[in-house]
Image (cartoon, rainbow, N blue to C red):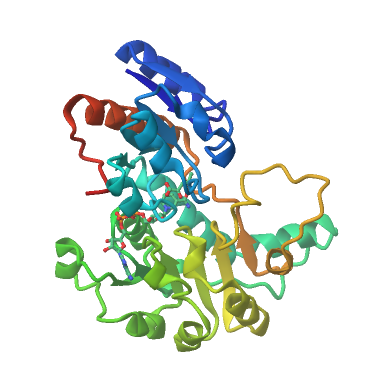
Amino acid sequence: MNFIAFSVRDDERPYFEKWAQVNNVKVDLHSEEISEDNLDTIKGYDAVIGLQTGTYPLGLFAKMQEYGVKDLSIRNVGVDNIDLAAASQKGVTVTNVPAYSPNAIAEFAVTQLMQMLRQTRTYRRKFAEQDYRWAPYISKELRSMTVGVVGTGRIGRVFIQIVQGFGAKVVAFDPYRNPELEAAGLYVDSLEELFAKADAISLHMPATDQDKHIIGQEALAQMKDGVYLVNTARGSLIDTKALIAALKSGKVAGAALDTYEAETPIFNHDLRNQALTDETFKELISLDNALVTPHIAFYTETAVKNMVEIALDSAKSVLETGQASTIVNA
Ligand code: NAD
Ligand code: COI
């Protein structure tokens, strides 16, 4: 059995190497993403181990079929960038890592919400200017707020526990209700109801074509004046231009965004000394009340170890038995 892994960072290498040794499987590591240009390198392998936020190459599954590569195991949760139907059609099994550490993302979402409330970005800017005054950037406390959680899966549920620990009231929306949260009476019946009740909203749902720009002009208008938004889910859920207008008008008091709808050419790239060409992104990050991070909510030691090991375990299981609990296509 031999695997080829793409987008491998230095911090992942020790986990790959240890797993390969313990399991006696050859795993060749490549730092570049899988793309149209390097598709031929998968020839001779049994599985491809991937990790990327951008789209996987169009011809990937046809090539995998041609070369007899049976499995694509990704090291992350979201499968919105993969054509799962095409994979199934070409006889390729796809697995993800559904729970490498929901805490990593939930903790980060709470961190960013707290930073917005305490206006740390503004204070850091003022500090750099040697302006050490307090007023007028007074904060709210989380225990005085109602926090709306959209999506109560693995990450949403941890997020709820943490903000409840701070004393916040929670309202939640999910088409598939969790029995414990249901019993606790947290759910509202519609997104509109959540928008009307929440002082801060955190998104923890997957991205699909149907949910593109679910947070747009209309949704923003339904929210409370001065609402805070947190998006650690996927950039495509938010209409960035509509959000920028709402941040400028004060309708939205702050937005913490770990994902951005056109992030692929920007996030996790070294663009030092290069002019940014995405005008919307430039405008967004210029705003004091936008706290933008380059898709780092996942990035903890626990998460990275699990991402590598669970993806490799999944590939091995698929090849040996045709089964894995992490298969995401039919
Ligand atoms: P999950 O599958 O456990 O939970 C997602 C929940 O969203 C489910 O309960 C589902 O029923 C619900 N949902 C689906 N459509 C919905 C809708 N229209 N409205 C409300 N709820 C809806 O997934 P998870 O592990 O909690 O991850 C959530 C998302 O977080 C992932 O899909 C991924 O996009 C994102 N993510 C981001 C990072 C990061 O580093 N920023 C890391 C991991 C995951
Ligand atoms: C995910 O796991 O879905 C993420 O968003 C993390 C990222 C490294 C792709």
